[in-house]
Image (tube, rainbow over all chains, first blue to last red; front, side):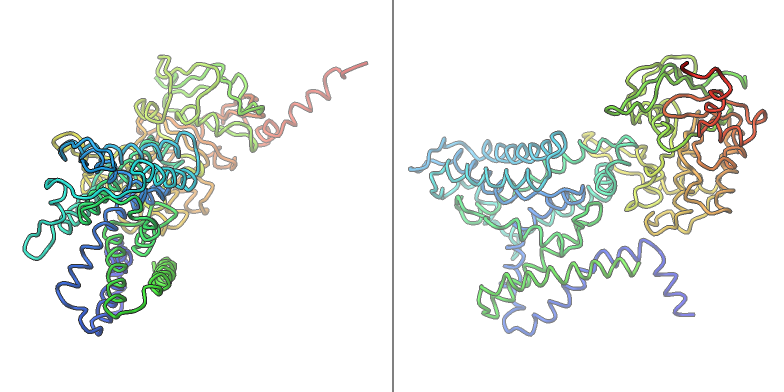
Length: 328
Length: 262
């Protein structure tokens, strides 16, 4: 009787899928219980640091999730982050040896967002109109824009930003940094976008089956280009956050971050094949990576081990994903 | 009224590279009529259907709908004319639920101020899906279930339900019974047969001649992209249709005609 009730409860799709798609939060909970045995882990500074470091990665993961949902991916996010930050820094900068126009952040901020969005749209157009594999396209833009970032700055850092630009990283609401709240806000907005709006529906449809979407008039190309453009835009936002936090734009900033971005998304249950995943899950993936990093740091594990541990986490996450398919 | 022509294709040609999929095809559907479109694999049946549904553009030819010349450049144009299609292998999106599939490309939305964000009216779509599937007597557990967990028969029923439920004028059905068991197949045919009660016409492609004979009023045979002939169902038996499909009728004609060459 009781088993029967449990089974009929399990058969309701919204409950069953809701649990299976958010397994990551269960894993995060278990991980945190484990980490609580590390002395000094459960202290406000450490936890806030986990959140703060999750913001830069987290914003990139939102854009990556959009691309992954359409069945594509964007390797260029780390370079777009750096290029947009450097672009804004040069618009605002005044210090030699880097050239600068000394412009106001009121101009620099929208300009960097526009640049990020245009690079993303370019990626999307190459993928849809020229039908080039997204791996090749975004690998190329990743390399090119990293190169441009280094050339433009002659490999120098640009430091010190005007208040309006830098404040975003210094303001706190109580103990919580504004960056954390903004990132959470972005997650809420994009969660709403992909679950409740027409664009979100199209995103899942195109990622699920491009041909059927086309046959039903969904204009898959437009959906994909928009996803890439949003990914570029969000990379620029992450560039703002990170450069403001460091009060500097460095030519090598965020190098190698794309791997963490992909890892967080996949750990969070976003499928590489498209059409499956959620912002809630992706956020869980971001936080799990952040929590593990902090645990390794607090436990004074050699940084050389970080990558190995993160690699193992990806294996476990993908293994669980396969298991999930059987439970349905 | 019943003899009024709903859809008429004239001189349709379509090539894919060197392959001539359709050659000077004339085809028409009357209102309140179910037309069977039969032919061997690669005869051009699916291409013909895709031209009417806007997925494929013809190289040459005219399309008339309700006595007006129309151009069907994309699936939305077809939808606007009241034409719905059940595509073979292009039916449903598996990672979406039944409601999302039912409303694919015709989602109900409320536009938020600024006009940028269009929010799905999920509850209304769910209600209408229940209503349509109920009316068509298609039973599935929950319309919030993702299509990938449903059985082949249930999926086909939903795909069929979508085409039949939305079709206002003409429903194009490419192999609607192919994936179905005997009982499900019979239910699908009943559903198709009832279309005429609602004043909707249909074109049905099927390899199963028995199925075609049970619902169609008229059969059109395609062979190598050419219309081989058409027959009223009541004037023909399946043997004749089979020989038209395989081309043995033609061979016979040659044998009885004057021998070629000296």
